[in-house]
Length: 352
Image (cartoon, rainbow, N blue to C red; front, side, top):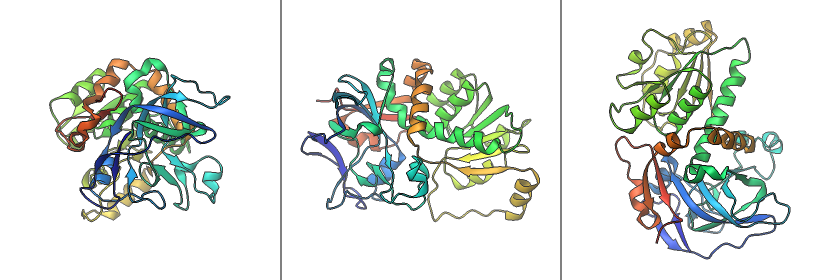
């Protein structure tokens, strides 16, 4: 079978190669791949910026935004052939730390966790894959192809949980949210904000194309002329930062009203310096009781919440997030970003 692999740390090593079909171990599902989402992490792996192959291996099968259909399942696993499933990305460290021991492996304290398609375990970027039944999540079959959005949605399920917990340290009844960045993470963040009945504002750079239309379809307001304009006349209770761009991150932290919560979900590149008045930032955060929290990855509870959120969302709107579908054999096209696009998906099931 075919699998998408890299040599971690080596730029230009991305390749579609033939590997042996996996054999499920005890307690594992055998899954036929339907689709695979491609994100910035995958592009960074292809650029050789990071990644860790399984012990004793040179290459890593990448892919962590999975969608597949069960071929075989162990008796009593709760799964059956034909079920639509995704695989969880992270696994707890073997020690384990206190968080991993409690199923909170998304918040591992010692960094010894492993991740499918990223760190020391092959991913889901192959025509068939196996996954432990305990780390598989069943989806509503009506979701079909949009089930590939499950992993990014799990990231947002966690982010909103963190916002609720941080805000819950005192009285907190937010009315508005500003999302910076209209990629998949930003737009899914906006979707959840709209589902919660909040006044949703989304800031991005594109003034045409898919993104403004998707935001408008949520009943939200789209901005493309800078953060100052986006918060003109209002100070959002919540900011969800999804660009990772240094200047935007700093502006986002200062954009909330009193007792605001800023949740950072974008990972910034290192080595880019930005001048900042730390004193003014500190003064505002302290005097307004503001909070800034980082959020990444997801545990099983977040995947389960993500499955619920997807099932309750408008299917046509979710389909609109997938702006490019590419045959598995043409994988290289998925690693070239297009202006204004949202989510790129590799079609594995229907590829020759």
